[in-house]
Structures are given as C-alpha cells and as structure tokens.
Image 1 (spheres, rainbow, N blue to C red):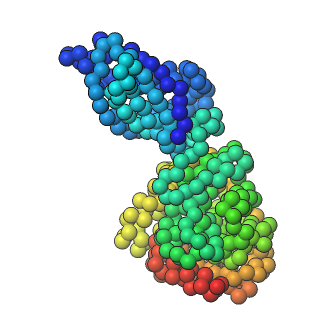
Image 2 (image 1 turned 90 degrees about the vertical axis):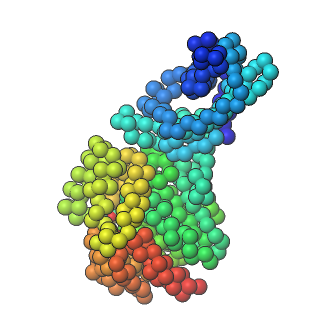
Length: 402
Ligand code: MLT
C-alpha cells in the first residue's frame, strides 16, 4: 500500500444539494480535485502527460458515511491499494477536519491507456511511484529482471516443473495442469509483455526469454526443473537446452517444432506485427485463433475460445511485437534434438494445424529415447482443449522420471 500526499478541501455551497448536504455526485468531483492537488504536491500534475498516457476510471465504489455542509473542510487521504501491470486502485477517505467524522470512503480503479486508447503497462515512473505490483489472487509473485517485473505463479512443493506458454497466450493456458499435478512444484511465469508481466524495453529474442526463465528459476530457488513448453514455449526450451542444459531435468515439447521460420512464415510475422501495432492484440487474436483450435473445440467448448481471446487481450503491444520479432528471427533448433540427454516427452494435438503430428513425430524420433503422445480432439493448444488427456500423459511422464 503506497500513501499519496493527503490534502484538505473546502465544501462550497455549489457542491451541496437543495437541503444543504454535500451532493453525492460531487463527492467524486471532490475526490478528483484531491487527487490533482496531491499530484501537484508530489510528482507534478503533468505526470500522465509527460509519460504519454491517460488515467481512466474503470470502476468507482463509494460509501457515503455522514453528511457534510458548506464551509466544512475535508481531509482526503489516498493510498494505492492495488497495482497491476496496466491498472491501479486508489482508496480514498474523506474526514471532516473539525470533528474527524468519516464523511466518505471510495475505491476507484484506474487503467492506463496509451495514445490510441489501448491499455498499456504503467510507465516506469508511475510504477515506482505506486510501489510494487500486488498479487491478483492467482498467487502470482513478482520477479524483477533487468528492471522489468515478471509475474510468476508457483504452486505446490516437490520437484519442479516449469510451464512456458505459447503465443498469444499466458500462464493461465496451463490452468488445468497447475491445478492438478499436485506432487510437483508447478512454476508458471507470464513471459515478458504477456499476462501480468511488464514488457520492458529490451530487444526480444529466444535468448532474452531464456535468460528471463533462468532468472525466474533463481528467484524461486529452483536449480533444475522439468521444462514444459508449448509452441513459442518450445522454441524457448530449445534455447534453454542449448545454453543451460544443467538447469533442465526433463523436456516436454508440446505442439511445437524445431525448425526456424520459412520465408512465408516470416512474411506472415511481418503482417501480424503491422496488425498488432496498428490495431492491437484483439486483431491479432481474431486473425490467429480460429486456425489454432480444433473443430471439436470450436463446436463443443466455446469457452476455450473466450479464454484464448482473454489471454491475447492481456498482451501489451510491445510484448506482441517483440514476440513476433523473436519468433521470426529464431534459429533452427533441429541440431539440438540429438543432443538432448534428459527424459523427453513430445505431445501434440491430433488436429494441430501449425505444428501437425507428422512434425512432432519426426521431432520425437530425432531425440534419443523420447516418448511421443497424440491427444485426440485437440488442436494447437492441447493442455487447454483436452486438459484431462494432456495432464494424464504429462503425469505418467513425470511419474516415470521419478
Ligand atoms: C504459439 O502457439 O506459440 C505460436 O503458434 C507459435 C508460432 O506462431 O510460431
């Protein structure tokens, strides 16, 4: 909780209703005045303008506790009680100075919008001012890597499994596996720019993502983990195997491929990058998602599409542009396959179009001793489309590792 400078304001006759009581709607105006005064005493009223963002109220809850009258002086105290990646909540209390009676309490939720009206992560200056990010209730903790806060969900105790999500998803795509697999310590970060993680200003690459994941493992005190990566998560896992093999206890490659992008795929990345920059994450989701889910999922589980849209919406534009760049430029990892010396499982949805079973099977054949499993009815996001079947295959594999 970060306190902001408190201010005192006078109630004027025009703030009051026909009966001389402070008008309920005017309370909000008064609180707004208090916030601007508070800014004037602290970082300056041009805080938002100089950071190129607009603070917009998304929700206001007011408790009116006692009447106030013309010429009453109210002391307004304010504190940031929640800070997310793109949003923050300010609690206000207004007490009459003369007798310290509580007149009103209010909580307002603000979202940070960029110049095009899209939610954007809080600029560094505001993040510093409002204090560290608070948890969203999903037990996410915050790990700071090179000044960027990454959200990491950690559940359970035991040997560690690190779940690395795909694009344009976030850690919640593993919700079923995080809720199950109770004999393992499940670690699921949001990659930079996704979910609740900040985007930072670095150049995105598989190397950068891999460094972030090693920093996450260090921060949660894990020296070795079974790493389970889906699609983009798999591309990053190849980088981990290449550079940090001693940190990888086992490998799960889910709906992914070792090859680099073809010329066509690179052109497609360029189009998606332009779309993300011009129209935002929603437009990218609309373009990509229908081709990722299986027809069975689309027909029988419309909520999976909703979850995917929600995940895409939580990406920041810089995060999306960065991920598309990193995927476009990623190296070919085919040569890594034969070097993998830890237990490996390759899982693929039977109806995965971007990384079909033929690709997954060839990948499994190239890894010494790898297991291979096809999940019926799933497309490109097997853990979310067919969670029971995917978790069962995963649990059997983890059990076998011991
Ligand atoms: C993913 O699921 O991460 C994406 O399909 C990866 C990609 O676009 O290559």
